[in-house]
Image 1 (cartoon, rainbow, N blue to C red):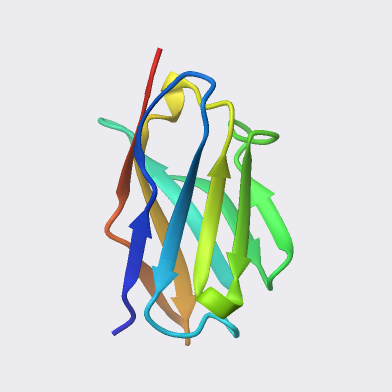
Image 2 (image 1 turned 60 degrees about the vertical axis):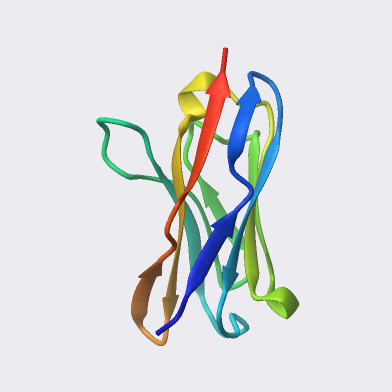
Length: 115
């Protein structure tokens, strides 16, 4: 069973930055798909960003230009750098990976942006 542990969430003010981390319990070297999703209260979980095959990134329109997804295979970790945060970014953020064809989710980390 693969474990994904997220960290880095917190309470910040509008315009500030946070970096989320998602550490996997095993090597991600061969993992093709890694992504970040978020779920705000009363809303469905939505895609935030993905990184495929190590270098192909994709972002939700609402975060383009502000968020950056990256991965460090040596640390088995995927990151989400979030800049210029807005109150509408408030949500629980989850990392999501496919390892050997099976989907795994982290437990989520809360991000709250105050106005």
